[in-house]
Image (cartoon, rainbow, N blue to C red; front, side, top):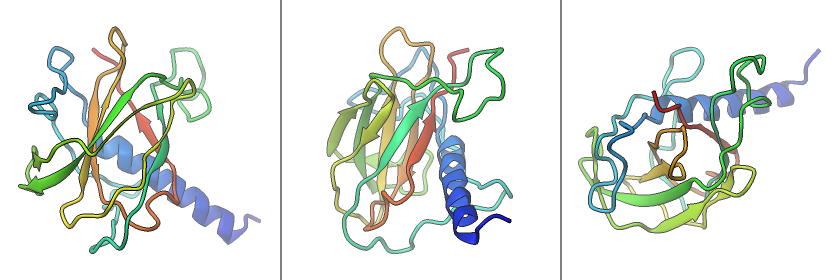
Length: 176
């Protein structure tokens, strides 16, 4: 019999993955994020867990926080199940974090200047610095290296004291 603690951890990990897969939206490969308008050509979809319910975030962020995670791509055909174990890790993805300044419910919220820029390591891993929470949250953009077969995506989150408790798995879709 599985331990309830192990099952709860696995459920949180799956919910984190589904949050990122659901919220991340593929970018038109001919139109990538840019400094003037990082969300140009990108659409957002609602996050949902495996039951179709929304993925909760704290209503009022408490304190500062960080995020850790791994950027992956879809498994290559013939690699078996498309899983976290078989998915290729993507190195060199540039991640930019912007505070949301307005239009928080819009498909393209008003963003402030970049507060952090980082790049995934050889294993696709990243760790943000500690960033202060805001009432409107932050937008992350994930831009693959030039010439990559992956498309750029973006997602929204709030930083809080436990935001790094569950690692993110960000899957970049293939460019069609």
